[in-house]
Image (tube, rainbow, N blue to C red; front, side, top):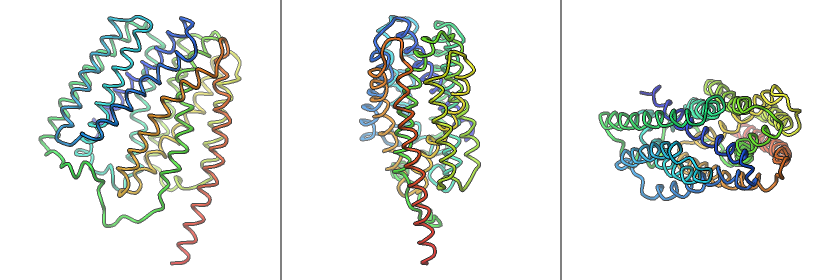
Length: 390
C-alpha cells in the first residue's frame, strides 16, 4: 500500500498536465488573445483555491472518503465533457469542473494517506518530500507528452480511462483505510510529535519565497511555451515532449533528493541550482528554432524546478510541530500564484512574441537565487554561533 499510494498523484497529474497543455495550444491555434491563453490555468487555480479553502473548514477524517469519491466522480465527468462537448471556449467549463474535482480529491487524499503512511510528519522529511516530488512530477509530465504525440480525441479517451481507474482506486483506498482503522480527527489535524525530535530553525518562509518565484515561472512555461514554440514553427510533438521533459527531469531529481541528506540548509547548492534555472530560461526566451535547444532548456530548468518544489515541502514538514500550518500556507502560495502568473504572462506578450513572457522570469530567478543563497548563509552562521555558545 505504501508504494501503491504514489500512483494516485501520478494519475491525477497526468490529467492536469494534459489539460493545461491542450487548452493553451488550442487557443493559440485559434489566435486567441494572450490573456485568454493565460486564463486557462488561472481559471483552474481560482476554483481550486476557493474549494480548497472551503474544505479546510469542514474536512475531517470521517468525511474524507466521501469527499474523495465525489471528487473522483466529478473528474470522470469533466474528462467525458472534454471529449463530448469540445467547443473552443467550452473548455473553460471543463477546466473549472476539473479544478473543483481536483480540490475535492487532493485534500481528502492527504488525510487518508497519513493513515497508511504514518511517517509523513516525522523525521523522514527528505524521503517524503522527494517521493512526492517524483510522483506528481511524473504525472504532470506525462499529460503534455500524450497530448503532444497522440490526437486530441484519443487522449481525451485515455483521460476518461485514467480518471475512471482513479475513482476505482479511491474506492479501494478508502476500504483499505477503514480496515486498518480510520485515523482520528485529532491525528488528522495535528502533526505527529516525537519526543526525540531536535528543534531546528524554521526555513519554511524561504521555501515560500523560492517556490513562489519558481511556481510563477512554471506557470509561464506551461502556458506560454506552447505558444512560443508554435510561433517558431516547432512541431507539436517536440513542444509536448520538451514540456514533458521539464517534469521528468524534475521527477528524477526528486527521487534522488529522497535519498540525500545534509544539503538542504547549505548555500552553495543553491548557486548551482540557480544557474541551471537561469540558463534554462535564457534558452526558452532566446534560442533559435531548433528543437534540441529547447530540450536542453527543459532539462536545465527541470533540475531547478526539482530544487524549489522539494524544498517547499521539505522546509514545511521538517518541523513536525508546525507542519500542518506550513503545508496549508504552501497550498495558498501555489494557488494564488497559479491564478496571477498566467494572466500576467498573457498581458506581457504580443502577437508573434510569446517569448517575451520569459524575460521577467530570468530576472526574478536570478534575484531570488541571490536572496536564498545569502539567507541560507546567514542561517548557517547563526546555527554555528548557537552551537558554540552551548
